[in-house]
Length: 486
Image 1: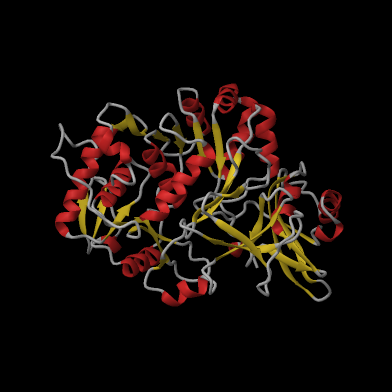
Image 2: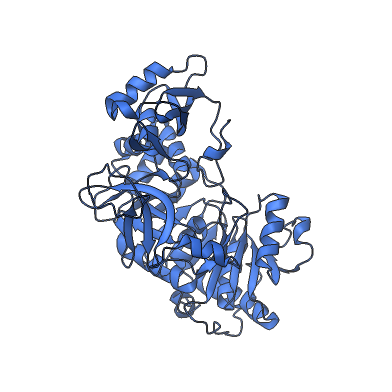
């Protein structure tokens, strides 16, 4: 713990480290609470420990306590279905589960020893317990992937990767102990947990978790001393929608030092609406469960809508054609799969050597499955997932993301997703899935095709438009294209 969170050992003050609603812990109290959890885990010789990852003070204390013990935390999504949860528990075989007192756990966890974590129960200082001495390669987290191509896989994230990513972001974002972060992200994912909780603690700063995201909560916290906001596109979309009627929210975002969006691409339309209302631009970064963070726009650089910045210090990134040849053009058009290599990467998929080997090239590059282009100045622009967002139509390779951005600029479109489907002439035709602003008068295919063709190119226009009441999304706000009607 001393190497990951120096402030927990060095800061005996009453400075607040964590706040969830009205409940908070100072650095001294957090060190005591997490140290107590860590001591109990060490007594049991726990290797992997499940954490019932509700958006609560107890989850944060539990994870820091697991790291104090030198063990690996397995954060569990409280919304997981029975089948998925049973798979994760069978696959990771945790020694026990940590949860807040009073949390009702599902039957799948009934066979595990439970330790209740009461974050505020420590009275007075506890006897100092030094963190367990562990190697930088020791597992810190086992985080399960979304399972879109099969059962979820457990990505084993070493302590080295956590430290590397957080220090690289500190460099890119000028992130210091003076920063106060506000967010309402879930804590079973690397965005909310690693960046949103462990990030401030590594810097010696503070985090205010909203519990549940709301624009009122964002305005309140940023107007009362918070300096940074982390969110996903769904959250920033709600902010953009609310800004015209909420002067306090405009003031809050205008005064923030840094606004960061991640986990999916933020539509250009929302970028522009927020910038027009507040004078501040949202910056983006790019990462995955297996890699933590790969790129980020810098706080002192250009916040360009649609780009995720340049590779972070220590991260190598390249674009590769399907035949393995390198994409070298910096023209904003040449599409390739992103491959990365560096100390930010995971170690393995737990007990899945075949899957681990398949994820890497022979020379150690991780195949992300994401496709992108690079602008002339080297900035990376994600165009989607290789499996669902790369459309081959009429001899062109087209990224769905740029078409989605163009569709969202149409006044009659509230939400949009783009996929490809087989076409005898074109190979694949472009299909637009649209949630209209007015369901009684949705924009038609010809109107939207002309709209896209004027902004991009004729070969990128949708050939089919299908209207929906809502797009399927996961807990992080990502559109689940595999769940679209067939």
